[in-house]
Image 1: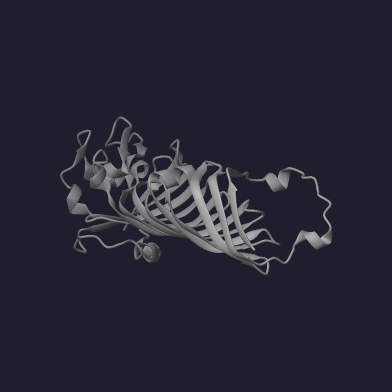
Image 2: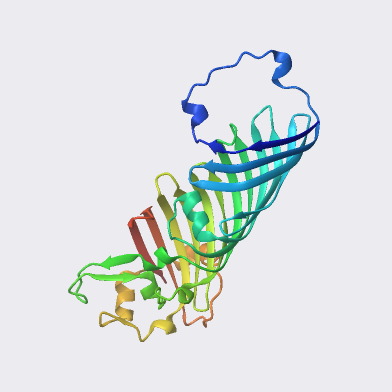
Length: 314
């Protein structure tokens, strides 16, 4: 057979099969899974939605043999870039195995609509994602590799940390990571770098995230998990920077060297973290000018309801 099918709209509703009882149709066994062979299968879909993800003008080309649909999705517009895919759909088990490739997509749009991370990532991205689905696309497991050209993490850089009163500072002092490492967050390109990394995605949770950020005088390695539905993250960040780039900086007339001693409470555990620090991309600095630190971040990444622990590593 040859089939050319047009669908105007298809909505994937999470949890539908788990929470809503469906009427069972009485169909003779001989018609349940007919052994069809389709040499040319074309499905044109006008509109597809899953949560906040919306795709238009999708075309699927494939064939069906032995209960397996092998298909390709030609290049289509997605997040101001392009997306294509190929994979298999297993009719009897209602499961699939799909490889996606994305080029020149807006990382901010993708992070927002897929993961609820609003204005957390900037830059143009390329990505590859291997997806396995179950229950008619209701359950998704995925592994992704990505790179972002001249990307940056605006909220990570602009998140404020309050220093409590001390002998050196009479009033509470608000500082930012971008202040500490001498980066002007108001100038996007000053905080931009080539970001790259990977993560696993299990329905509502990003797991085993690993993000690398490299600049001339600052590089970071970030790892952790993020719950999409609760918008809660549990992250650790290790960094290296050139200490000579912040010697003359003062914040509210307080020398930065003092702030470093208060905000980045020294922790003589550098050797214990050496495996993580070795994953941080290199910077331009002599061994004597290179400083290391780690940051623990836990909480809601979108509303800044987070707990932060900063330590300089000696």
